[in-house]
Length: 247
Image (cartoon, rainbow, N blue to C red; front, side):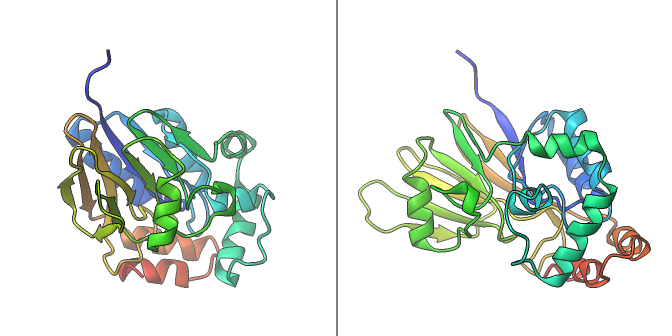
């Protein structure tokens, strides 16, 4: 039987190459080569092709997010705010055919015995609902069998815990904890490319399947470089300005 695994889970990259490279350097120091992503590879940021090429080179297993599907025309984009819509339209113009195909081939969820990966919430991953309430967390937990599910979409790290014998879920924002025997959880790993929890450091989740330890690590990256590229691309400046505040 395969032994314990140590995996990394990336959240909402949003074409932010500087943040992705910083996070991957952190994972290299941890010796982690098995990497997953909860989606929203594109949108907002100025380097979608470079980000996707790294994902392809590293063989990152990624599910689709709402920005990814909107770019492909699989969902309506009229609910996006004007800044997000402008970024999507720009991305559609610059994305290479090969990288577009990468987006087209991303599934909506990945189910493995030890964990489940999806973007927003279950049981309807194609609806891209937000998992930020107890009812949404309960519905998601009921739709996968593994001990833990990983998601993103809200850009805010958060953990929902289902304890045996307890009707209500618990939640916390801890960054280093273990899932105890018979407990189950939904873990939001936040956003690499555009954090919105008032912490501008890029986060990445690390999960140890053996002892079910969950860690959220964060790292500095070159925010001014991304801001400069956003402006140079003609994208809305607010998409860069917000990076330094984590909002």
